[in-house]
Length: 333
Ligand SMILES: [Zn+2]
Image 1 (spheres, rainbow, N blue to C red):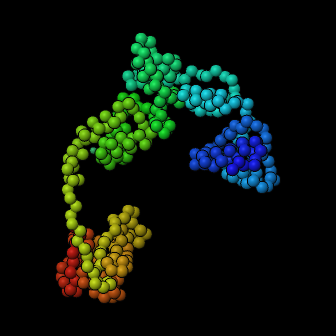
Image 2 (tube, rainbow, N blue to C red):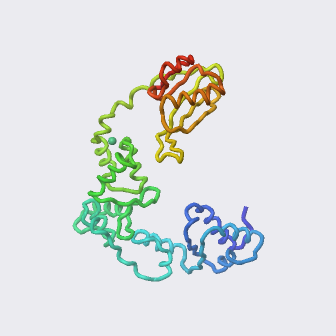
Image 3 (spheres, helix red, strand yellow):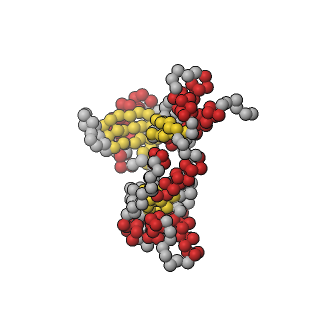
């Protein structure tokens, strides 16, 4: 059904709609919106307007938007914009100035790199290096269309149009090491490691082959190779008949720095049936602490447990004490 809007209202509404659709991209940025007509700007900036126009103004209030009328016609603006993005930072303000495009500067490292030398040449001179066959010439130009220069650095556009930082040969090793074996790593499979590098915004032409080679030769990965393929142990169900019959005991710590009361450990007991938790802070993780805790916090309040399960058998009270109470103990593997 056609909207009963005037032409300028349609233009204003399309701008409001576009702003809403691109909300996550522009919310925290200063945005300049170019409109064809001065009246569109008036519609979206006037005070004290009610009705649908008032609603549009309310919709765009949260954005840092500057609306500017322009005389550029759509096709011309778009063509200029595409040219600009390929060679320098996107600055729409410059579209109004009829200035010559500045020659981009490319970092020397890219000009000398065998990976990027030809591409840099094309981006600088807008033609392929002389002496190449027609096919090679065309191939290089197509390849170069995926690259652009920003602040003297070379970027590669992925299929989503996101710019990835191009790395030179001597930078790739440290990046692969960081994303496979160091803080950002985790000794992942080579495909996952390569994906991580791409997601972090880095690119070089032989990325996948290099990462595969690097991961295959990783010493730690070779040592643990095959161990991941072990079948998991069968699960053993724990049958509990009633509450406060079986408790899990755990020490948390050692905590640095210790509390003002010199407590460095936290002793916890969890009932397997109700999941009720008892916790105390303690200065030392030893037998006497556990015995005191069991007597004061568990037995005197919930009765004598049948079984106590811990992570660490070393921390269990001496056999004599729990045998005296008739408690069975078991440590988890
Ligand atoms: Zn590894």
